[in-house]
Image (cartoon, rainbow, N blue to C red; front, side, top):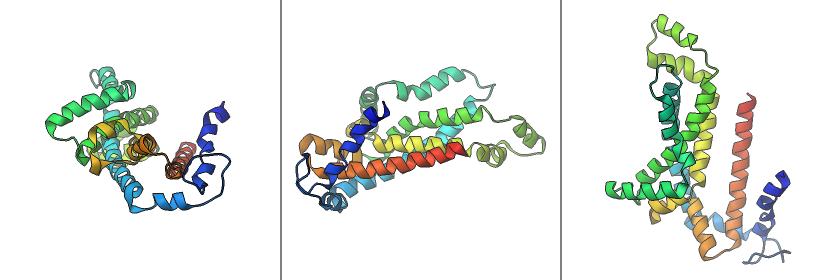
Length: 242
Protein backbone atom coordinates (compact mmCIF):
# COMPACT_ATOMS: atom_id res chain seq x y z
CA UNK A 1 0.00 0.00 0.00
CA UNK A 2 2.87 2.39 0.79
CA UNK A 3 4.42 1.67 -2.63
CA UNK A 4 1.04 2.22 -4.28
CA UNK A 5 0.59 5.61 -2.57
CA UNK A 6 4.17 6.88 -2.81
CA UNK A 7 5.13 5.40 -6.20
CA UNK A 8 3.58 8.25 -8.23
CA UNK A 9 5.63 10.76 -6.20
CA UNK A 10 8.80 9.17 -7.53
CA UNK A 11 7.63 8.74 -11.14
CA UNK A 12 8.21 12.38 -12.07
CA UNK A 13 11.79 12.55 -10.80
CA UNK A 14 13.48 11.14 -13.96
CA UNK A 15 11.47 13.46 -16.24
CA UNK A 16 12.81 16.50 -14.33
CA UNK A 17 16.21 15.61 -15.82
CA UNK A 18 14.87 15.37 -19.38
CA UNK A 19 16.73 17.14 -22.19
CA UNK A 20 13.52 17.97 -24.11
CA UNK A 21 10.68 20.38 -23.33
CA UNK A 22 7.88 17.81 -23.23
CA UNK A 23 6.98 15.01 -20.85
CA UNK A 24 7.74 11.57 -22.20
CA UNK A 25 9.16 8.15 -21.37
CA UNK A 26 11.71 6.88 -22.21
CA UNK A 27 13.90 9.95 -21.84
CA UNK A 28 15.70 11.03 -25.01
CA UNK A 29 18.54 12.45 -22.91
CA UNK A 30 19.49 13.94 -19.58
CA UNK A 31 19.98 17.61 -18.70
CA UNK A 32 19.95 20.00 -15.73
CA UNK A 33 18.43 22.82 -17.77
CA UNK A 34 15.07 22.68 -15.94
CA UNK A 35 16.73 22.99 -12.54
CA UNK A 36 18.64 25.99 -13.91
CA UNK A 37 15.34 27.46 -15.09
CA UNK A 38 13.63 27.20 -11.71
CA UNK A 39 16.60 28.94 -10.09
CA UNK A 40 16.06 32.04 -12.21
CA UNK A 41 14.68 35.15 -10.42
CA UNK A 42 11.30 34.88 -12.14
CA UNK A 43 8.87 33.31 -11.93
CA UNK A 44 9.91 30.43 -9.66
CA UNK A 45 12.24 32.16 -7.21
CA UNK A 46 9.82 35.08 -6.93
CA UNK A 47 7.01 32.68 -5.99
CA UNK A 48 9.31 30.75 -3.63
CA UNK A 49 10.28 33.97 -1.83
CA UNK A 50 6.60 34.85 -1.36
CA UNK A 51 5.85 31.38 -0.02
CA UNK A 52 8.72 31.61 2.46
CA UNK A 53 7.65 35.07 3.64
CA UNK A 54 3.99 34.15 4.04
CA UNK A 55 4.83 30.75 5.53
CA UNK A 56 7.26 32.18 8.08
CA UNK A 57 4.97 34.99 9.24
CA UNK A 58 1.84 32.82 9.40
CA UNK A 59 3.78 30.09 11.23
CA UNK A 60 5.02 32.56 13.84
CA UNK A 61 1.51 33.90 14.42
CA UNK A 62 -0.10 30.45 14.41
CA UNK A 63 2.48 29.12 16.87
CA UNK A 64 1.96 31.96 19.35
CA UNK A 65 -1.83 31.96 19.09
CA UNK A 66 -2.13 28.17 18.97
CA UNK A 67 0.14 27.61 21.97
CA UNK A 68 -1.73 30.21 24.02
CA UNK A 69 -5.08 28.70 23.00
CA UNK A 70 -3.96 25.16 23.81
CA UNK A 71 -2.66 26.23 27.22
CA UNK A 72 -5.94 27.96 28.01
CA UNK A 73 -8.14 25.14 26.72
CA UNK A 74 -6.38 22.54 28.84
CA UNK A 75 -7.15 24.46 32.05
CA UNK A 76 -9.96 22.74 33.95
CA UNK A 77 -11.63 26.03 34.85
CA UNK A 78 -11.94 27.21 31.22
CA UNK A 79 -15.67 27.54 30.37
CA UNK A 80 -17.07 26.04 27.14
CA UNK A 81 -13.67 24.62 26.19
CA UNK A 82 -15.24 21.99 23.93
CA UNK A 83 -17.13 24.59 21.88
CA UNK A 84 -14.09 26.86 21.57
CA UNK A 85 -11.89 23.93 20.52
CA UNK A 86 -14.41 22.90 17.86
CA UNK A 87 -14.46 26.48 16.59
CA UNK A 88 -10.65 26.63 16.41
CA UNK A 89 -10.24 23.33 14.53
CA UNK A 90 -13.13 24.02 12.15
CA UNK A 91 -10.78 25.12 9.31
CA UNK A 92 -9.51 21.52 9.26
CA UNK A 93 -13.06 20.20 8.81
CA UNK A 94 -14.72 22.74 6.52
CA UNK A 95 -13.78 22.28 2.82
CA UNK A 96 -10.97 24.66 2.01
CA UNK A 97 -12.83 26.15 -0.96
CA UNK A 98 -15.67 27.17 1.39
CA UNK A 99 -13.15 28.77 3.71
CA UNK A 100 -11.50 30.54 0.78
CA UNK A 101 -14.77 31.96 -0.57
CA UNK A 102 -15.92 33.15 2.87
CA UNK A 103 -12.52 34.68 3.60
CA UNK A 104 -12.51 36.44 0.23
CA UNK A 105 -15.86 38.18 0.80
CA UNK A 106 -14.91 39.22 4.33
CA UNK A 107 -11.44 40.43 3.37
CA UNK A 108 -12.83 42.30 0.37
CA UNK A 109 -14.80 44.51 2.75
CA UNK A 110 -11.72 45.04 4.91
CA UNK A 111 -9.41 45.84 1.98
CA UNK A 112 -7.19 42.81 2.64
CA UNK A 113 -7.57 41.12 -0.75
CA UNK A 114 -4.39 41.11 -2.86
CA UNK A 115 -2.25 41.98 0.17
CA UNK A 116 0.42 40.07 2.07
CA UNK A 117 -1.37 40.88 5.32
CA UNK A 118 -4.57 39.21 4.15
CA UNK A 119 -2.74 36.12 2.92
CA UNK A 120 -0.76 35.83 6.16
CA UNK A 121 -3.92 36.13 8.27
CA UNK A 122 -5.74 33.52 6.17
CA UNK A 123 -2.85 31.06 6.39
CA UNK A 124 -2.58 31.70 10.13
CA UNK A 125 -6.21 30.62 10.54
CA UNK A 126 -5.42 27.41 8.64
CA UNK A 127 -2.30 26.72 10.70
CA UNK A 128 -3.61 27.39 14.21
CA UNK A 129 -5.59 24.09 14.48
CA UNK A 130 -2.44 22.03 13.91
CA UNK A 131 -0.60 23.91 16.66
CA UNK A 132 -3.53 23.64 19.07
CA UNK A 133 -3.93 19.88 18.58
CA UNK A 134 -0.19 19.15 18.83
CA UNK A 135 0.44 21.36 21.86
CA UNK A 136 -2.74 20.15 23.60
CA UNK A 137 -1.61 16.54 23.32
CA UNK A 138 1.75 17.52 24.82
CA UNK A 139 0.08 19.37 27.69
CA UNK A 140 -1.88 16.24 28.63
CA UNK A 141 1.27 14.87 30.28
CA UNK A 142 2.26 18.16 31.92
CA UNK A 143 2.27 18.11 35.73
CA UNK A 144 0.26 21.13 36.93
CA UNK A 145 1.87 20.87 40.36
CA UNK A 146 4.98 22.43 38.84
CA UNK A 147 3.00 25.60 38.12
CA UNK A 148 1.49 25.58 41.59
CA UNK A 149 4.96 25.33 43.08
CA UNK A 150 6.16 28.23 40.92
CA UNK A 151 3.21 30.37 41.99
CA UNK A 152 3.90 29.49 45.61
CA UNK A 153 7.48 30.68 45.23
CA UNK A 154 6.31 34.04 43.90
CA UNK A 155 6.57 33.57 40.13
CA UNK A 156 4.10 35.48 37.97
CA UNK A 157 1.94 33.46 35.51
CA UNK A 158 3.89 34.77 32.50
CA UNK A 159 7.27 34.07 34.10
CA UNK A 160 6.15 30.58 35.13
CA UNK A 161 4.92 29.82 31.64
CA UNK A 162 8.15 30.82 29.89
CA UNK A 163 10.50 29.24 32.42
CA UNK A 164 8.61 26.03 33.30
CA UNK A 165 5.81 25.20 30.84
CA UNK A 166 7.39 26.23 27.55
CA UNK A 167 10.67 24.30 27.96
CA UNK A 168 8.73 21.12 28.81
CA UNK A 169 6.35 21.39 25.84
CA UNK A 170 8.91 22.77 23.39
CA UNK A 171 8.89 19.61 21.25
CA UNK A 172 5.12 19.85 20.79
CA UNK A 173 5.35 23.55 19.95
CA UNK A 174 8.06 22.93 17.35
CA UNK A 175 6.11 20.04 15.83
CA UNK A 176 2.99 22.21 15.59
CA UNK A 177 5.00 25.01 14.00
CA UNK A 178 6.35 22.60 11.37
CA UNK A 179 2.83 21.42 10.51
CA UNK A 180 1.63 25.03 10.32
CA UNK A 181 4.50 25.96 7.99
CA UNK A 182 3.90 22.96 5.71
CA UNK A 183 0.18 23.79 5.60
CA UNK A 184 0.90 27.38 4.54
CA UNK A 185 3.67 26.40 2.13
CA UNK A 186 1.45 23.82 0.39
CA UNK A 187 -1.83 25.79 0.32
CA UNK A 188 -3.13 26.91 -3.09
CA UNK A 189 -6.91 27.49 -2.93
CA UNK A 190 -6.87 30.36 -0.43
CA UNK A 191 -3.83 31.83 -2.21
CA UNK A 192 -5.80 31.97 -5.47
CA UNK A 193 -8.74 33.79 -3.84
CA UNK A 194 -6.83 36.15 -1.54
CA UNK A 195 -3.48 36.75 -3.22
CA UNK A 196 -2.82 39.10 -6.11
CA UNK A 197 -0.06 39.02 -8.76
CA UNK A 198 2.51 40.32 -6.27
CA UNK A 199 1.49 37.69 -3.70
CA UNK A 200 1.77 34.71 -6.01
CA UNK A 201 2.99 31.75 -3.97
CA UNK A 202 4.84 28.69 -5.19
CA UNK A 203 1.84 26.28 -5.16
CA UNK A 204 -0.19 28.87 -7.07
CA UNK A 205 2.61 29.28 -9.63
CA UNK A 206 2.75 25.50 -10.07
CA UNK A 207 -1.03 25.29 -10.43
CA UNK A 208 -1.08 28.01 -13.10
CA UNK A 209 1.84 26.36 -14.88
CA UNK A 210 0.03 23.02 -15.03
CA UNK A 211 -3.11 24.75 -16.26
CA UNK A 212 -1.42 26.84 -18.97
CA UNK A 213 1.73 25.15 -20.18
CA UNK A 214 3.37 22.04 -18.73
CA UNK A 215 7.14 21.76 -19.02
CA UNK A 216 9.70 19.81 -16.98
CA UNK A 217 10.56 22.90 -14.91
CA UNK A 218 7.42 22.21 -12.84
CA UNK A 219 8.73 18.71 -12.16
CA UNK A 220 12.13 20.09 -11.22
CA UNK A 221 10.54 22.37 -8.63
CA UNK A 222 8.40 19.44 -7.45
CA UNK A 223 11.55 17.42 -6.89
CA UNK A 224 13.04 20.24 -4.81
CA UNK A 225 9.86 20.50 -2.74
CA UNK A 226 9.83 16.73 -2.24
CA UNK A 227 13.37 16.89 -0.89
CA UNK A 228 12.48 19.75 1.47
CA UNK A 229 9.40 17.85 2.72
CA UNK A 230 11.47 14.73 3.39
CA UNK A 231 13.99 16.78 5.39
CA UNK A 232 11.19 18.37 7.44
CA UNK A 233 9.61 14.99 8.19
CA UNK A 234 12.99 13.55 9.20
CA UNK A 235 13.47 16.49 11.55
CA UNK A 236 9.96 15.94 12.96
CA UNK A 237 10.73 12.24 13.43
CA UNK A 238 13.87 13.10 15.39
CA UNK A 239 11.81 15.41 17.61
CA UNK A 240 9.29 12.65 18.32
CA UNK A 241 12.08 10.22 19.22
CA UNK A 242 13.43 12.76 21.65
